[in-house]
Length: 209
Image (tube, rainbow, N blue to C red; front, side, top):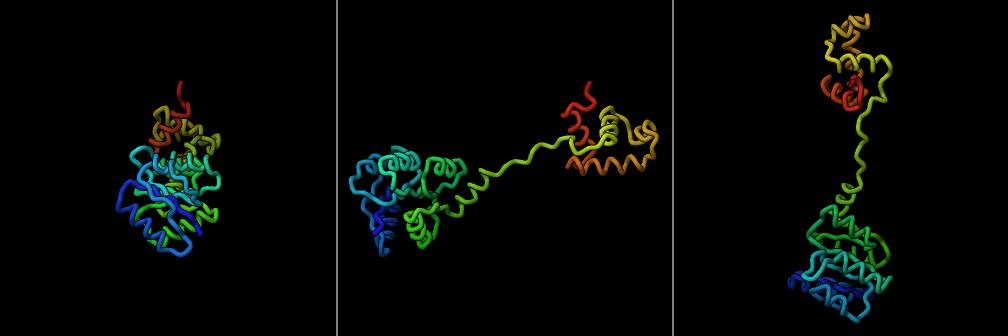
């Protein structure tokens, strides 16, 4: 039998979730409370706690961390309407065992409780997206490292305000050659226009005296 502690300050949610859990064979609600203080006062030992994120006297993440310190074997699921990146990452960083949204199907809620009780990390759909967003690594800013010496020479002249024809004349090359080199250079830098390339060059100190 998996013993469940439920904490939610909305009476309808608390009653409905408790009834859902009690209706499932192998699951039993040992306490249904409406505040963090009541949850901390529960003497019945649970296997898993299902906690609302926002309680009138605290939050489910801090409450869950406190309960786990008291009972390291306890599994904790946050059960909430809110899937903001910060809350999801904070809950996982606090050592909690899952994050589930209240719009989940009843079958998914029961499956999540069973999975968490077995030791699995449980993330609902919205929570999965939040974790991906929060852990996505931003691409490094573009640099001039991809350019060869001729590219840099052309780009420096562009920074100084020379036109394509003037650059070609200065380097003793055909204007078409310069245009082709500039087009290739934009691709190397990952920018769309000559003005973007000039701005990037200035940001990297090229042509700046």
